[in-house]
Image (cartoon, helix red, strand yellow):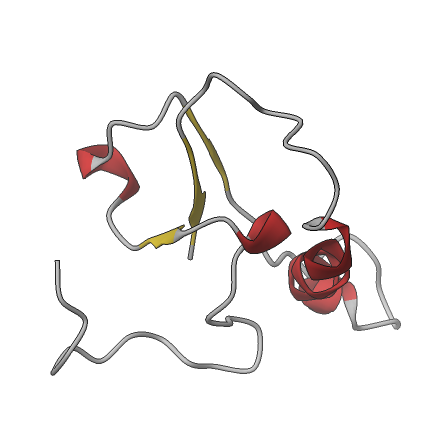
Length: 82
């Protein structure tokens, strides 16, 4: 699927990079992946302290540094949901 000409959600809590630099999949139900990693921004768990919604994006950003390690998921088809 070409992303040319399509507009995706580029809000403050969404991003265009995947967990461990896995390929992004904007249609996880149409994927043949064995499992999908998705981050859900949820900011209603604490009162008076916002910021939990940035957790999934922070984990994705940090995980790009771990992509150089060996493939932990060898033998499975993986993708990262946007």
